[in-house]
Image (cartoon, rainbow, N blue to C red):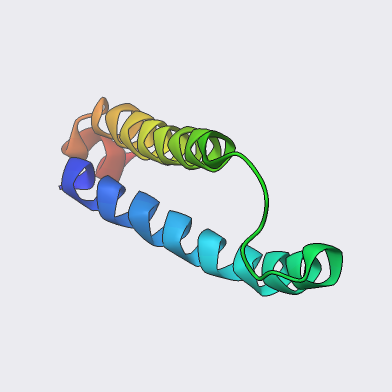
Length: 78
């Protein structure tokens, strides 16, 4: 279940982060160059998105693995 939820969480985070950054990038680009499209390398954006997605997936799956390592009955009775 966590493996299915983690990509949705990562995609939601990337989408929200992209929308939040556009709020500042577009006005800055208009002020700098007169165009709402920023001048820059798309590969940098893709690298940041990839790193964010990998970190979100790794964190979720690692936490789930560590949690499920303990048998449920032992976790409840402890």
